Length: 247
Image (tube, rainbow, N blue to C red):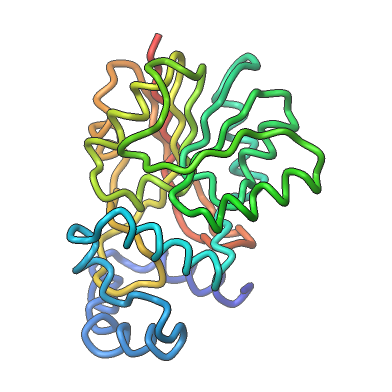
């Protein structure tokens, strides 16, 4: 992992045109075969070609398989501190795309009333086990970001950490995040370009802060670029932290 972080940081220092050429060569010659050899049959190497045609059940199954085979825990303590700093006074929080519960549990430990929602029953099972082990209370619900199972303005805050890049319908997802929030929406997502073959099921790509800000369309918001190259978990690279104000 230290070698990977060093390589990614070195690559980030290259001119963008050089990075694009190297990536293009990798995509044409190596990327698909590398994924097939690395992950085998459970990983849908053609995800970006197929995701728009998948049913909800197929989508859930894909993510259940992903959580069975990989940890996929992109959330770091540095991320949690940034998000905590962006929230404000204690209140209720909905964590959309809770995964195995890292951020939801961290927020609960800080005194927030937390609900975590995810499409994967496998992820939520593991999240529940972790919450019980760490002796914190979090409400867990299964659901999609595009159709959150909550009434309007149900939560003071909505957080969405390393999840918005996974949704099928970006416009519906951002509308839902705003609909159920009273005060703020806080989003953390990778800063990246589209690549057909990659080690994830990303469907939405944000190269610049304004793209994320435009996706929400709030009159009061901030979106900043942060450095995550020193992360130890799943994600290393540059990310975007968006804070949208609803009041």
